[in-house]
Image (cartoon, rainbow, N blue to C red; front, side):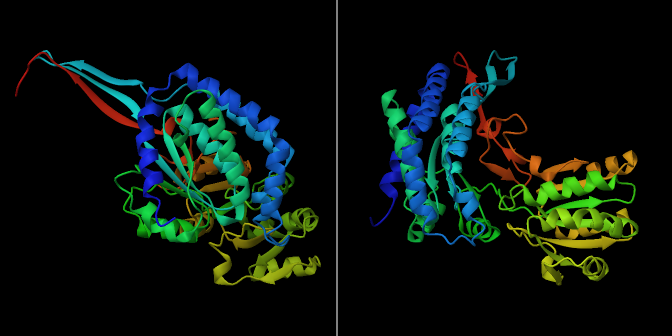
Length: 415
């Protein structure tokens, strides 16, 4: 294949068919897709194993790549949930009749062709396809080589369901993973309406810098949890541990715990054994390093400047001690990727200050950052977590896969 123009043309042509699908038919397609995923678990697991076998066990991305039967069932459940959500398109947002008799309306309409560029997360393939089908959009999927076999199997299943319902199979397309086609996708302004990169900061930066198609940034998360001096330390230790170890390879996992100095020793006495169960490697500033050294914590390093503002995506985190809330907020301002930030404190006034002052897509008081998720927030699923401020911020889900159209009806009026 010399280029992907033919694939992009087919996707653009399919937008008409996607818009014409009825609400009922879109729901039926997704319910059938959920059944298809469950019925083909063994095939998906077999193809996924081909991808897993290419990746060393030490690679933290391997957890993202894995599709077990349990995860496939979760995907099927998510697709069913999306099928029951209201279609976000064709909603009336404004209506007026002008003095000259013109009828003016503003309605929501699908974005068109949504291009997703992502790495070793094949669940994105299903989530994006389901969200785009439900909202009347077309998606072109550019997954990484790490998940080639899994993505190929999933897209074939999705296209089979589309064909069963006489829908255009080009509504969901998997583009080649070869990097040589990336520039063509990034500049395909004639065929692609929006690009959404989901993955490492390097991937997001590359897409933003080289794309002429509009880009919505998602994915990169440098997430902090600030444990303030009034915090319930047992609660804080549980929250920090969950944020770090429950699934460290995802963007809403904790990277840095910030601790008020006067509770650092007491917190670390509770926290260190919990992190040790998972062999978490800690990069500690001088004050916390001495405490952890005294606790004989084995996986301990002295932090350098680069360990703050670093997205670890692994069983690793940094520790920063501060004198007060002002210093903690300054540290977050300097190093946050504006994804998810949390405070643990019994000071309600300070919690409200934190929630109001911290500039991030999601802010938490006394809860784990791991909750930043479209499914958890009741949105069915997500394409990613948007960390920018235009069009969408936070979980980029069904409700944001639309834009606006003005519809004007007249009877010969001229201006």
